[in-house]
Length: 135
Image (cartoon, rainbow, N blue to C red; front, top):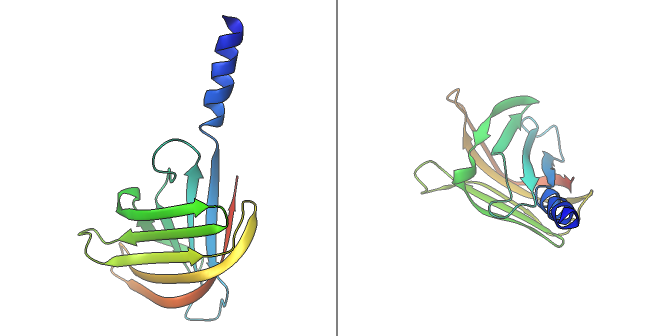
């Protein structure tokens, strides 16, 4: 009985392993640097356990809530994320990185049309980003 409980405990603890990803604009001089970050997990269900935090010029500008993320894919060597606005009418964020693996970085593109809580809109199209995923 003790061995069964220990085995179940070990299996369940690995199901909640946490990690993160971070994407930063490669060319920092282009209209101010953009970066996006989030926490991920290996649990069943939505792999993002936080929303997407949007940074502009090293300042937090706001967060895209988990319920607005309609596509998240981080399998093999591919990272794709897509989020919509509050009315689910327009895509406000899309990140695509074709060649990335865990604990390493990859280069991809970011499209962003984000309205901050401060009334500012940050728009970027086809910005080159370096993304890192890891635990």
